[in-house]
Amino acid sequence: MLDMKYIRANPELVKAGAAKKRIALDLDAILALDERVRAGITETDRLRAEQKNASKSIGAAAPADRPRLAEEQKAQKAQLKEKEEELAKLQAELHQLLLRVPNVPAAEVPEGRDDSENIEVKKWGTPRQFDFEPRDHIALGEAQDWIDVERGARIAGSRNYFLKGDLCLLEGAMMRYALELMVSRGFTPLSVPTLVRKDIMVGTGYFPGGEEQAYRCDERDDLCLVGTAEVPVTALHQDEILDLKDLPKRYVALSSCYRREAGTYGKDTRGLYRVHQFQKVEQVIVDVADAQRSIEHHHVIVSNAEDVLQALGLPYRIVNVCGGDLGAPQIQKFDIETWMPSRKGYGETHSASRFHEYQARRLNMRYRDADGVVRVCHTLNNTVAASVRMLIALLENHQNADGTVTLPACLRPYMGGRERIGKPL
Image (cartoon, helix red, strand yellow):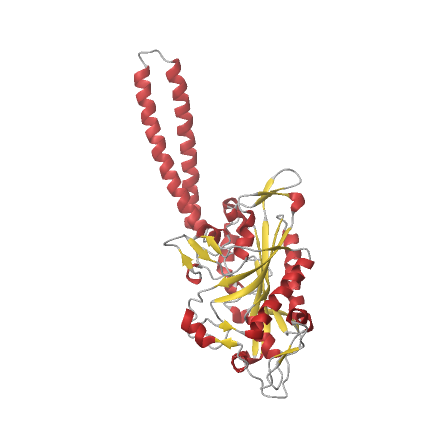
């Protein structure tokens, strides 16, 4: 969340940021409530001081006056308790409102209403021109007995699937390659919980606002399935004060991810593009509160994802996400979209975001700077590789006329040294 001191000092900037993101925000109401909270703090402090002085007065008073003074102190105590309860309610109300105040987007974020107005900033590779009629990933996967969406739906409902045989192995190969690449670049690998408490979803900025997209176990366990390893990895140092010498923290995690895809009824129903469960390798950086360093980290995490796609031989483009498509927590986000022949276009496979203090302030994640001052960290994250969307791109871009699929060289060591998978159809 944003610091209330920052909001007070920059109300018009915060309002403009919300407007750029197309997020409704009554900041004047928040500022008015903040005034009431501060007045309440002043009042309770005054009452505490009076009660403290009254205690001293009773001890110094004549015995005949002590009963009267004790009754007065009792009334003061009751008044203080009442004011403290009122203040606690106001503070809780203010906290809930602050959770919905969006981060202020960077000046470099383009204006725009939705993803159709994102700005392309880079393109790599040339979409393949086939000299045969290419199959989409479902036709190819079903012909090779690699994909079974019928049984997946029967067992778990729509948008579920089985990966079988070589495609199951290919998913694992892609994830392992991405994970090992990141480890070679100094990222610490983590195996993380995919069930987290609700406060962790709040801390990373997914709640409030994203509840409809999450699978929740509220009634029995008060836990949520995560949609990305970003959630547990970013929260790893919740409520800690980190040593400056240990920053930046660079983490990478491979996990299962779960998304309800609420609001997408009838959209992308064929195939594996929009599913409820998938695997993802995620990179997270936690560092000092320095805007320029965050920008440098942002470029690095985008480059890491690019290197994976280039090694896989998959054409892609990078877009600077516009205000209307930018989530509430992000300062700026770059999406990487990979070429998918069956879609006759690019489909999103990666999202690289920087947040400044927004997540870390919610998580109470801090560090002590060179002067001994405790400050709030900056956080960033990006996908390294995500199935099954990248499997779509791999199958469709590297298929052969006979229905086999040529493996990128970087994945062959994980696939028994084979150059191709599948049988001629």
